Image (cartoon, rainbow, N blue to C red; front, side):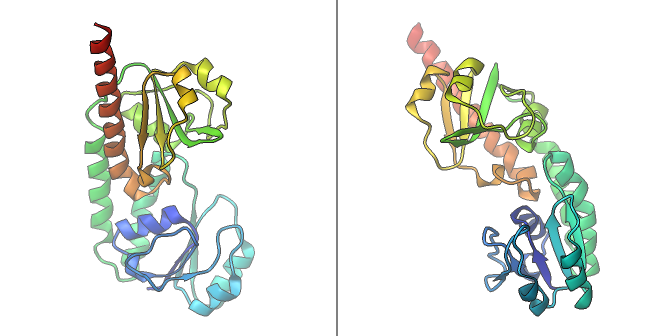
Length: 250
């Protein structure tokens, strides 16, 4: 099996299902430790059709709800299938696990369906216990400018399924202003990534938590299992800061 993935999230999902070594083409942002020689063939918007054809894939994976006739023509010319998914929510990733696993199994990766079943079960267990943080939490994936996980996103899905409250009620991934952050008055602000939280955000919340959790920056099979664990780490930090502040006030 020879796989080209035009999505970091799909690359991660294929790897989690046991197909990482079969990846021969990828985007510049894909991590392929099981296939270190995988060639960069561009991205969803700027794919190199000649490079894709030269790799003679059997399977091309992309993350989009829009078809790509040129890519499909090239894929057919080398005997490859093109399959597309669109990931925004946890349910999108859940729904993709079985069909992706079936494609991998058909290509000789026999353990993929069992891996998909294990991931689904591990996810259900990971979100079972409720978080302890009280009040709405603002989740940011960028701090300059502030950009948030709103409703209908996978982080919102995870947090809400664990009993938490998202401070942002706008859908998608909105850019928000400093005034918006203050106006939201969140019980806590969680920055996901490697950026430090600006000091001015203390005007909006006394509880600031930064977590380096790359699995929460892309909706993939890894997010399904590791994402809840990272959010629990944020929850623990929120509760510890809140308790220390309460003790200091006493």
